Amino acid sequence: MFLLSLSLSLVIEKVILISVILGGSLGIAMYSTWAERKVAAVMQDRRGPNRAGPFGLFQPLADGLKLFMKEEIIPTLSSKFLFVLGPSLAMLMALMSSAVIPWGPDIVTSNGTISLQVADINIGVLFIFGVVSLGVYGIMLGAWASNNKFSLLSGLRAASQAISYELAMGISLIALVMMTGSLSMREIVDGQHGFWQDGYFSWNFFKQPLGFLIFIVCSFAELNRAPFDMAECESELIGGYHTEFSSMKLGFYLFAEYINMFVSSVILSSLFFGGYNYPGMDWVALHVPPILFSLIGVGVLLGKAIGFILFFMFIRWTLPRFRYDQLMNLGWKSLIPLALVNMLITGAVILWLNK
Amino acid sequence: MDIQQLVFWTISLIMIGCAIGVIMSRNPIKSVLFLIMTFFTISAHYVMMNAQFLAIVNIIVYAGAIMVLFLFVIMLMNLNADTEPQKNTLVQFAGVISGGVLLLVFIAALKSSFAGIENQNINLQQASDIGLIKNLGQMLFTKYVFPFEIACVLFLSAMVGAVVLGKKEKELGQTSEL
Image (cartoon, rainbow over all chains, first blue to last red):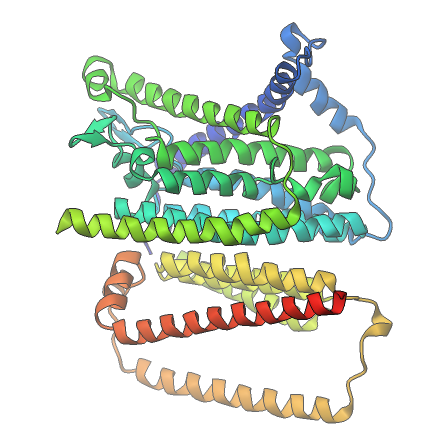
C-alpha cells in the first residue's frame, strides 16, 4: 500500500503547494471578473468599473463584500440540503482539476527535487475528464432543488449540453494521447519541450490544429460560457439555474465559472501550447539558478493562461448566443464526426511515420 | 489493524450505507445521489487495489455520464406522492422471489470464490500492477483481444440501434404536428 506511506516533509510540501494553487486560482478568478467587465467596456466603448480604487481595481473586493452582506434566502419549498450542496459542488469541482496540472519544471536543489505538481498520476488526462464530467452535478442539483420551472429547464439544458460536448472533447483528446503515448499531464507537457524539435514545432497545437479547434469549442460549451450559455439565457430563463440563489451561494456559482475558466485555460495551454515550455528554455536553464528557471516556467504558463482567458472574454463579447437546436447540431453532427476523422488521420500519420 | 485495513473498512462501511440508502430513500433523486456515492466508494476500492484506470473510468462512465442521464430523466418525472401507482400484491411477490434468487446466486458465487482463496498464497506485489493502464492495455490487445473486439461490435450495434430509434421517433413527431 504505497499510497499511505507518505513522509511528513512531502505532506508539508504538498499542503503548501495546494494552498498556493488554491489562493492563486481564487485571486486570478477574482480579477477575471474585473477584467471581464473592463474588456466588455472597452469593446463596447464604455469605461467599465472605475470608482473603487485606481482603475476600479478594488471592484472585485467590493463585489465580494456585497455578496457576503446580502440576505441569505432559501426558498420554502426547496430541498434545503441539495440547495446548499449545489453551489458547494460547483465550487469543489471547479477547484479539483488543478491537482494534476504541472505548474512548472521541477525545482532541483541540493536537498532533492521539488515537484510543482500536486499529483503526477499516470492517468492525469482522464482525471481532468472525470472532474469535468462531474462538474454538471453542481448546476443540476442546484437547479432541481430550487423548485423553480425556469431553473429546472436551465439545469436540463446544462446537463444535455455537457453530455453532448464531452464526447467530442474526449475523442479530440484521444488523438492527442495517441500522439504523445501517455496519459500523464507531466509527460504530455515534457513532450513539447522547447519550441522547435526534430525539424518541426514541438507544441501540440502545430501537430493537432483540428484537435485544438474541437477542444476549445468544447471547452466553451463545458464552461457554459457565451456563445454556449444557454443554461443562463436571461431572455428565456430569467437567470437560469441560479434564479433562486442569493448571497454567497450565487457568488459561488458565478465564481466557480471564473475558476473553471482559469483552470481550463491552463489545461488548454498545457495540452496544446506547451505548458511551461518556451522557445530558448535550454539556454535559460544554463544561465539562471534552478529556482528562478522554475519560476520563469510558471510565469510562462500563467501568461499563456491569461491569454486564453482574454480570448474567452473576447469571444463572449463578440458572438451572439446559439439557438438550442443549433448547439445540438454543432455538437453531434459536426464536432463528433470531425473529432473521429481527426483521430483516424492521427492514427494513419503515426503509422506512416513509424512505417 | 494497520492503516490500510482501517481505510478499507471505512470505505466499505460507507459503501454499504450508501447502497442501503439507494433502496431505502423515498425520494428518487436522493436514491440517485446515494448511487453516485456508491460508485465513488467503489472507485476508492479500485484505487486501494492500485487499479487507477478502472477507478477513473468507473467515475467518468457511471457517475459522470449514466447517472447524469438518470438524474435528467427523474427530474422530468412528476414526483408527487399521489401520482405514484400502487403496486399490487402479485408484483411484490414476484419482486421478493427474484430478489431472493439473486441473493442466492451472489452467495453461491462468493462461496465458490472464497473456497480457492483459503489455501492460496496471493502475491500482492505482483497483483498490484495489473490495474495500471499500460498493463491493462497490453492484456486487452493481446490475450483478450477477441472478447474485446466482440464487445466493440456489440457497442457499435447498440449505437446503430440508438440512431435508428431516434430517427423513427423524429418522423412520428413530424407527422403528429401535421
